[in-house]
Image 1 (cartoon, rainbow over the protein chains, first blue to last red):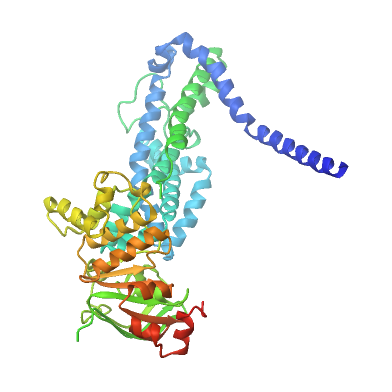
Image 2 (image 1 turned 135 degrees about the vertical axis):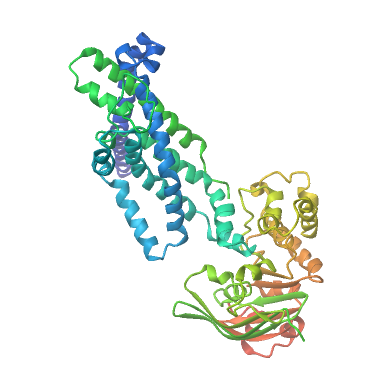
Length: 277
Length: 252
């Protein structure tokens, strides 16, 4: 009887331990969300719509919001087609030399220090052209976006059971038709997940923009060859300022960034399930 | 006599693994020809040489000849894609495309291969579904996805998908292995109806099934063709000791 109790006690203690550690691990997430909401909400409530649309001297972050959307859009435009095709290539030719290298290189790119990407783009675009620009910022973000989308595309394609590949080819389809008309549509949810995760990631990036985007907070961006602002970049700059108003603006901007990020991320997790096989 | 399928000294290797060992086989036109044998004897591999689907496996190497209606499909000027358009295939796992509706699953081969003018496709889809004895069960839900069909219905949908392209030969790789007994009976019934018009090659690991549905049977063991002949003869009066052991259940 006492042995049984000791065994049950041990199990309870272990469960409590695992539970406490799990709580500790996710605590920062909730703390970030709550403190950003608690400090950002009053700022936005006080300044109203002008916070989202106005320029910095008007107490708003409009140009930065526009800049973030512009940069994300351009990065998607540059990065998605390349990333998608790279992922497909790695799936379709896994044993070719390039295919094997592609997989390894993508893994490295995934973990690559993002600031180095910024330095690289500065050297090839910003220095020669003599100015920061949306194009430079977007190129840096596209380089960060590419491995996410490529790896997710590759994984999504690999999850398709081999029997469907056989079925597609048994119908007398060419490789291109089997791939693009049957297998890719089958994996589209997985691929889309990768696209959205990549977009959410680059929408929140700061380091690659430091030497490439430049910053633009007193007027809206009107050309992709001129400097542009972004919410994370603005937060970085405002936090370094001694002014209290700037700090408040930074908290408000943080909340906006968080909402954009969650707005992309939560739908992925909720609605994008795999195709029912 | 012209055979639907004829192999001459067919050898298949996976890497250095020799899985089909010098098989000479003649499969007559029309009727059900069963390829039976225990698991791993090479029957699925052999089936995949008849439409060159084996080439999806990069380590596979085929030597010898496979002739479809007299033409060697392994001769260098033959395009495997054209071969596959004339040879339908049904698989061990019922695999209708899950992201396409029931209708689209049957129409997809016609559509992507541009085999029919657009306005004739609906009629052909109906024809194929009727031929596969599925029409009555799905005619009111052609726009549903196949995930709600039973295993047997999915398999008949795959049969319809293959039939829609009007192939001359139908390859079936253990089509009832993952189907319940009722669904199995329906598919076997279907074979009886189709065999007057098509050459059906049925791979099965069950001697009982081969005895029930086939007109001719070949017994494959460890990559070698042991015995081939009319089903009745092979089952009632086998020439080879291994065949006798297999059909009486004494062998895997």
